[in-house]
Image (cartoon, rainbow, N blue to C red; front, side):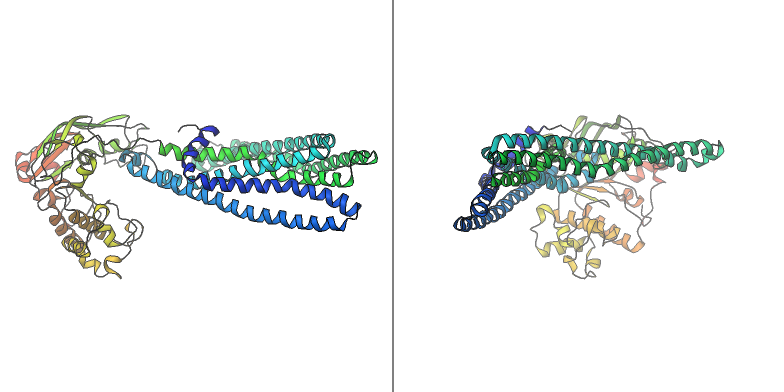
Amino acid sequence: MQTLTGRQLCLRLMKYIAPYWDALTVALTCMIAMAATMPMLAALVLSMMDGVITGKNLELMQLILLGIIGIFTVRGVAGHIGAYTINWLGNKLVMDLRMKMFDKLLALPVRYCDGHAEYDSVSGITSGTGQLARTFTGLVTVMVKDTFTILGLLGWMFYVDWEFSLLALLIISVAVLILRLIMKRLRAMELKAGQITDGLSRVLKDSVENQWVVKLHGGEKYEHERMKEQAGEVSRLVMKQIAMASLHVPLIQITTAVSLGTIVYIAAQQASADEITAGGFASLVAAMLMLIAPVKRVAGVKEALHLGLANAERVFWLLDQETEPDTGTISIERARGELKLEQVSFHHHRHGREKNSETDPKVDPKAGSEAHLEHGAASCFVLRDVTLTIQPGEKVALVGLRGSTVALARLVARFVNPSSGRILLDGHDLKNLRLASLRANISFVSADTAIFNDTIAANIAYGVMSRATEGMVTAAALSAHASEFIRQMPEGLQTLVGEQGVNLDGGQRLRIAIARALLKNSPVLLLDEAFETMDSEPMHHVEAALDAVMEGRTTLVIAHRLATVEKADRVVLLDHGRIVESGSHQELLARRGAYPAFARRLLEPGDGR
């Protein structure tokens, strides 16, 4: 992930803010207007003390009261407009970034989603953009309104009495420095306390998780001493924190009292020498008090900027990813469905710790090389020199190592590209076809096919088929044998299926996926038969729906059931990424090669997965 500087962050954000320059101008103008009212209030204090209280000028008092009303009116109006406008701008920034990130996510290769946790992308789009926009609005407010406020108040103070102001600021700066040192010490102690507590947790966790070793090797005394040592360190540090925290308040009080006392003494000396009036002194004190809040906010800009940079890195890292390359130049309408694979090889480049069934309970010991593929080594061949021709309308069942069969289906849809060799559709190399044109001719059906949190009708008529009429959707549902359960739904086709189709069972979700493929009516079908266990009645409907969706289509089936390979025009057995046998189910059985042993492991109709 790239590291952004504050300058780079601002420059990249400006591209998204530039279209709303008029709103930004209004917000900045209002902030500057608010900042200008602060020294005006300090000036009114001087006039009030010297002109009204000391000089007893009642006419001036009326003008001052009108001035106070006017200033707070300006502050109220400018504050409201400025806050609304800058937050409107922040909201626009959030929306633009979210849509930009979402569009980028849709345009990324499938391997991106395979290799990154769902949470990372979703969190970046939802919370990451929101936090970045809040950081932006906060920084703009601080750097404009608070900076101009500080400059205005300092300018007024030095105008009234520059020597007194300089000395007072020096004294306050020393006091602030002392307080910052105390707070820095407290934060360092908190950090150390966290580290020691982590050590305590590690000892506790080791002792609990490894109790059988502790008991077998007589480690109780040793673990007791470890725990005692860690607990003692925590206790000593806690007492240091208490001591420092208890000194914090009196030190603040003493420092403040000394500072104020020094300032008052200096003011009294100047007043006795007629170098400053009571109004001037009161105005300076008011200005110093008004400086406290904006100075604190400006001092906290660094922390806010760090937070903004962290979120910006997440946002812009996604935006900087390369989109799925679409190098094709040829568009075809409806393909005949002839597929040719010419010496196609494909291998994964995956890095990570190799897992096996002996050391990792998550790996199925029966999975063999398939588990090795899923968790596997840095480079693993999935397909080797596969040459295969599939005629239009032919049903080909792929059996063998699941990793190889799934990879073959992904290659046909160009979710991945071959490491070598080429794949042709109706004589066109897939690399020369536009992705949209290629994928318009392919449908995919699987138990894992996405079901969206929408209505049944919207799930069937998804994407480019979203404009399909209700009659077309109903016909597709009928052909997919989904009508029998849809009619029982409270709102029929308009029933919401819930997140990931939670309101549907496995057979119902599968039939909706089949109805989607039927409505799309593409000439090439990819079918993954890794279905969950179903009762005989739902399985009967699923069988009929599968027969309907495969009819007249070039079909590649990742087969797991005996019924499928029996109905297939051809069965292709893959072993270690190579085609070892090819022919009809009966032909392969008659050859008495590797296929019969594999066929015995296939599921009978209705057995599920």
